[in-house]
Image (cartoon, rainbow, N blue to C red; front, side, top):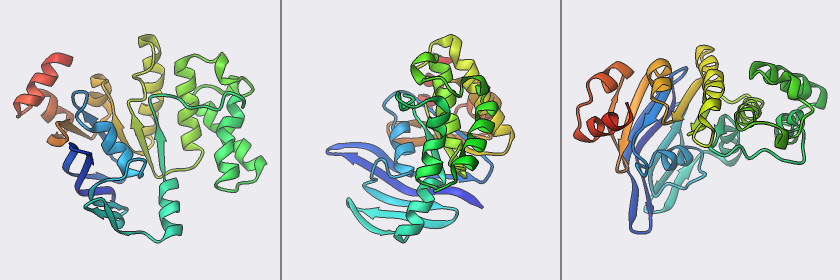
Length: 252
């Protein structure tokens, strides 16, 4: 079953065409990594999947059901309201910035949404939160406030917070780009563990080593379009388009 599928997704900001007929399928349990130059539309595409950006036209399917369909900046159809909201909760998202609540401890940050949104009992939410903090290597930081953590630790808390909602798919929007180089590895290592456990993941990243090692499928985007799609070996070893060849020369 495909977890996410897009058909001819377009996004315009006024005259600027940021996404041009983007067609992509992410299968259940698949790790898809999107690479490409700045301004290619990668982050806009990711944000459009969970409607943080409203697409101008195109269709988005979640688990093979039509989630959202727009044409000419007008919503043609979407899932019924309750199911639509439910599906949004199934997509965990981790951003470049960690967006943790500074007045809450690490544990409280991770527990907040499960209690308030999923309506979980506090005890159950706390148990899950502690397990997730252990998973991301931060069980000793449960009672610490975010300001006392490094960037890498804050990003790992952000991942634990997203996982606490028990999503079916995780979207990562350049999760390491705001980090000092020495902290990148600890976040990528958590992401690798998730991939090994079978989590469906769609990642926009500049970390080519991660893409090579972890991705089932690599997507190269430039100028709002998918220009290449294949296994890491195919895309890295044998890029077909001049844009991909030039990009990979500059980053590898």
